Figure (cartoon, rainbow, N blue to C red):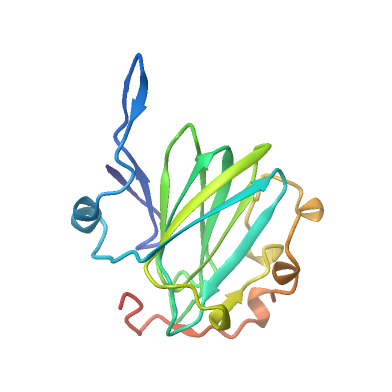
Length: 190
């Protein structure tokens, strides 16, 4: 597994080692040992999958403490633009984001630590998106930042005025109106 550091510490792009031959390909999509050696100690407890069509945007989601989640995400069919936004009060990178294209062709994965809002836009006809979480989902802890917040400077690579959003995602506030429950001085990795 190749680790690619991003401009925000802790937000990691992972490229697997792919073995191809006349039958197709093989790669190890996750190894607890290797992840902990190269990224950090983690205990994933829940796997999720979604299927969406072109123009669907999901996010920017997070879980409030004490139900915060780190996520390891990948697109197993199609192509998405995946984004992590730093929402940790006091962080030098507060409000900044990292965006990465994840696809069935590049097999990349994206690690989004606790204290970040996460979302994606579907750039292909269909996308199947999978992610591991290090804490169980708690509906009462749902939170979000508006995926259409222009102040974040995210190029979603599709026209956001035509985006397909859930009712929940339409109601999220912009970052300027957001009171973050995350503090850079807290240990978010517990």
